[in-house]
Length: 228
Image 1 (cartoon, rainbow, N blue to C red):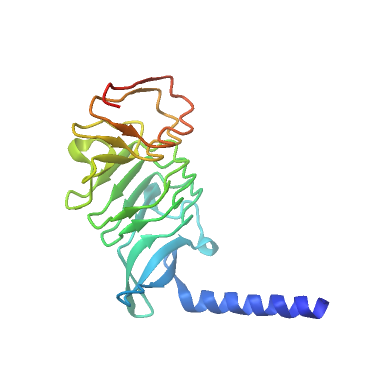
Image 2 (cartoon, rainbow, N blue to C red):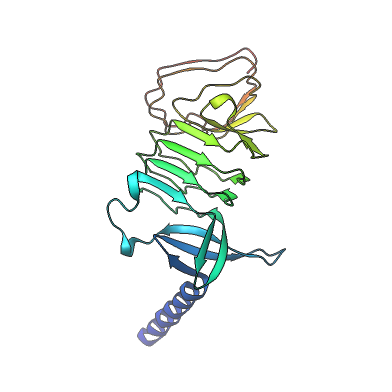
């Protein structure tokens, strides 16, 4: 039995090491996971984490984190199309986040627990925001998206990420102002925004999805519209 367990762990370790060697790399301060599109066959990468072996405090200048849109490794250029699940969880040094052009997807819990994060800038290439990528970001207040983005907008400097076609706020903060035309507040849009104390939801909002104000522990009053 002991020999079997020993062989089992040796095999698992070997497979794990092989996967790490063949399916990812470190460049700069980031770890990357190589991904292959099943339909097109294109090879791209997702930022998977900070390379904590080389971690310094702070690990970037001015507490601003910039996610690149491309990375060159061993002479080969890769498109960075995603920020991976749990990639930067509990990175308390981040105050400002700028996501580079080319990044298309931010996956679930990517920035979970980044308690000092105050501002996020999204690129024109953003296509998808997974479930609750900014949960636990208590101080998030400034949200912007490039004006060239066809799917999302942050119209009239409203400090929110809006899904344009549905007029839905999918990410908000304590400084969000509801612009005209908004119909939906998305799932978990304001979750964990402890800076929210008062909220007036304007006429025209027809639906508030589940968990939209989850854990807003300082929210004292909320005014709901007749249109809800």
